[in-house]
Length: 500
Length: 37
Image (cartoon, rainbow over all chains, first blue to last red; front, side, top):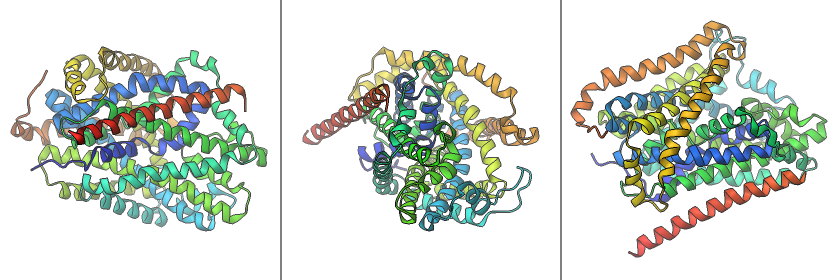
């Protein structure tokens, strides 16, 4: 069966930008930057992009493109034992997309709700009571929230429609879903910076605190942000690169994606802190009290900030719609890229028909995602998100880099991509792959020990085990079972070569 | 806005947008050359 191809180089670049620039750029980066030295954070952030983001993205592109396969098969072709770590990434992607789709459902609800400013003067109450109907504990599932279910159905149908013809159908929508959030962010920025108090908000975002750079925390946060933001170690970039011809550019594509991703993060920071500055001035609330990241920023603080815009209810409705449309368009291509990573891995491994695999994978994901659509869904999402991001993905990323850096001839990879690329990378690339993840591994080990001692958000230990440590163990066991038992026969049949 | 914040704003804009401009320009030139060949 002939492998699918991207319609053009631009389609591939846009799809990868769409995957990298997701909700994290809008609701994580501005907060992380603010709480880690403000403008000074840009220095470790750019250093992290140069020393880890670009080298690791190039590595994933090179392995995916050279082996013309998704993460598990591509890594398995390098060394049979590495296949396990490919599956680890795929299983993490599977878990993430199951709750990411539910966040998309919440965004759909707020997007529709923005038409009549349904959140009124209490966005958090609207979010938890009207949309989520959230229960008091993770153990109290209490059935489903209908509005979340409907939003979830819309999300999965949209994902299926976008992925139904693989790269061909993705190529048709990607231009719109990548351009739209940039245009919408520019609208939000123009509105924000013309408001009284906006410059004070931007001051909080950009004023550098260079003393913060002396501590290890800022640097860990910068590297972690780069990992999450570039969709590294999620099996996505392997899958996307595997649909490019083997002689396509690698390094310049990676550079464009890295700069575009940084651009979206930075624009989001300007839009968010400009608006928060105005809110702070009109409500008399200190910016440090409203400069929060994540779910609270999206569904509580920012809608409340939009409420303070001058011009009445109509203006609030318009800018509420623009904000949630920004989140929706940022999130949708990250969602389908995660699904595509799983589809590619499964289809490549068992040589399955791509369309049937797409339908099957989406159906299974939709079923699993129902747990996050229950009234206890917010609790489970919070737990799973913390553990899978803090442990599952970080373990996957660092292990991937350490294995390739130390147990594979990385120079042979460099010899593959340099002749076909527009920018030639020197030996520094090899050193970055070898050294930086290793240092990160040591630093994060200290952080992990401290984090493990403190129960996350005070959830009861049974829930920490089910949604946290139990999940991480399940990811490891599932990856092992797929590699050792389910897929064993097929490795022999495909006749993969060991290239150590 | 403090002067140091303005400096960081300019720093970020220069790094990000010049980086984007240079890399996209290189890709466009390369694609044009490939088509001509």
